[in-house]
Amino acid sequence: MNQNTPAFFARLRELVAAGQLDEATNLLRQLLQNSPRLDDALQQSGRLSDIERQIRLGTVSHENATVTKNQIRTGILGLLTEIEASIGAGGDNAGGVLNPAGVQAMREEVDKAVTTVNNQGTDIKNQFIGGTFNNPTFN
Image (cartoon, rainbow, N blue to C red; front, side, top):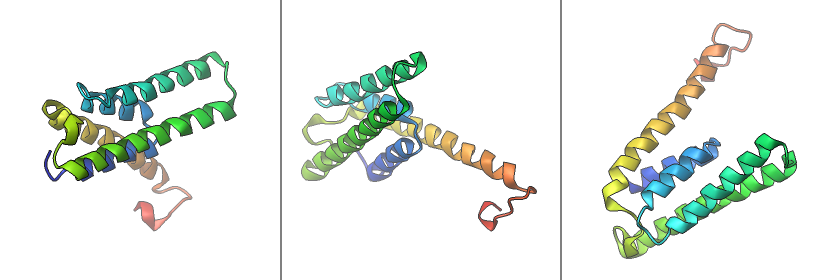
């Protein structure tokens, strides 16, 4: 991987912070394809699918759903930290952690996802312009 690695992981963290857990887990799964750490990403993805199904069915309380989603966020962020540490400790792609063939494609997907998140923020900004809320931050 090249010098864009820290920015790539920062973007994945932005997706997690924005609540885009589906996109973050999908990108993480693709990034770790053919890697020993793929199972960790699959575990978090499966937990997310399960809690979203329970929410749709109304079989989980709001509090339990929130706790589970926070645990998933923590798991994803922990996995990202472990990957970064592995790369930092042993150079590029230490221990075959990442799938080099898919890294560029993942960067492009993350860029697209972050653009989507940022555009949603722009839409919110446009709703306030000319309204009663006139904060210079949004101009």
